[in-house]
Length: 243
Image (cartoon, rainbow, N blue to C red):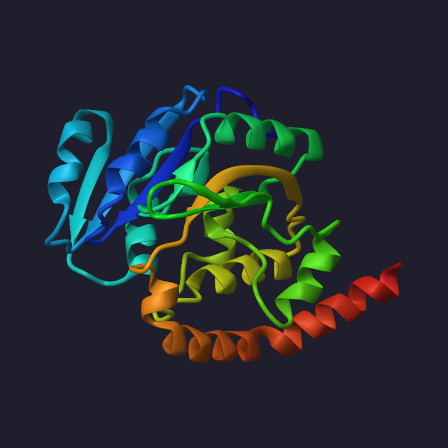
């Protein structure tokens, strides 16, 4: 069961992102007190100075550029929290994000969950509220996974010991490392409930990877879906048969 005093490690992968100071501010502003913030500098050459005012409040890890999955894994390797949360350096947490989601998981007796989120623009203006896909249970999530990923990675809160069972993010996947991990978690038999309240603000801007590398993202997504489609289909069929 999740306890309110359990430490949560927030890992922020950083690579030449102009919004990183805003992400850090949102992590530091959490109402949940027992938090460690880990910034993983993935070989950045720009905007590093925006982290300097916060260095006393965070753990700063530098590494050669290897992509988001490698940065997340580097953060997980040094994290000391019972729970792991991911914050992209261009996104924001609402102040109560961790407190509310851990309480939700406690009520559900869950060790992993994801939540709703809002869209914001480059200036932080809200473009859309509660834009996440609402899914009633893990079976519905698995059905969705057969053709795509409804989970915003920065809304996931997961107990860190799950990585010992299912492994870390796949560093060979540049864009779909998150989808791949969430699928491995549900295939390992974990309930993965959805919290309907928006707790994260996802920034839509011209420099975001999904826009800059749109065709590459689409191609890798198709490959990742094919990798898991057979097992997911069988898993869903088995759940349906058990009802």
